[in-house]
Image (cartoon, rainbow, N blue to C red; front, side, top):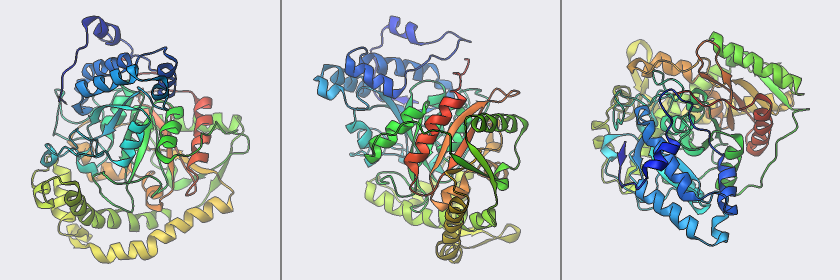
Length: 498
């Protein structure tokens, strides 16, 4: 973690916010409550930001941050506190947030977690970041991530601030934080901030929040503006809000889209579908938490229906890698040119620090190839064209037909079938990758919204377990309303003991 500026935190302030070894991580107000407190004059933004900066330093061993903007964040907080009430009463006024480092924030490096972009400092905010800042949010840090967003473990040896490489789990630093929005989730789990932004191609806001006990929304494809974000795939990529509380997911989604506020839905009459392919390979902790969550939801009035989705995994496989790996080349070339980063894709690839990502770029992305039989590679274009013409439309139709036939509000399943794996180079292996994205990938490829909600801690591991709701395309706000009600039923997770 590099601090690009300085801080003026007093020793007394540090003592007030930094827990002693072994103590419980500090409780945080939601972003909603923090903004209301600043508006009413019950809290000063400078105090909120100072506390968040102190917590960020306290958890530096998690490798959650690439850049900590101390001076800029404190200056913005002081401006908020000195502003007239109209400016202090914006939806996110004075609230500290964090932003994944592939999302551009003016004046701060946007590394995308890769050394070649270490010195790239954009002059403009990405639209999603600008909308949060226009609503009064204060970006205190850019968060670490799986390099170039090409993975689900956060095992990235670049930009290390702790003694060991890779972004670490807030509940157990020997475990993976997930990815690719690793640092935002770890910062949330560690109670540094209450809300932040990530990006999601095949699970990258939902997986790390499942591992770190936060909530996250992958919106319907195309619902959020994608400008100013280092890409993988124009078809599959989206930014997404991540937060400790569903109320903050609701608020961030509302600020980004301009949607009307929603209240918790009534769970009586909500219909959720279970698909056997999305219930496979669970470990004991995940199975127990998922089953208990379903039982509580049924008791609260939810109807759970077992449904079949023929060829779900077959269609998904025909879309996922062909689309992401083929589009990655053209989309990154276009991004580097438009952003003014000053390098081309060959130099970007040459400096990649993570072995798994380097192998993917050099062996597949740049030569426009896909894995073939018997450790061979094949040209990607035919598979990509088939995916876009046939497989993806068929997958989207399968989702539409399933929701309509069974009158479902959403599908429900464990976000990840197992708790967070140990943090090690093996966490980036292909078998681990495929296992982790088992449940998040199909909805991503269909372009439907997916909502991750913390469901409990595993009895054996004491690690977070999440459940996901995938809803019909365009049902984002209904999904969030149901998520608010589910959180009220299941409760929020306790902070990690540190």
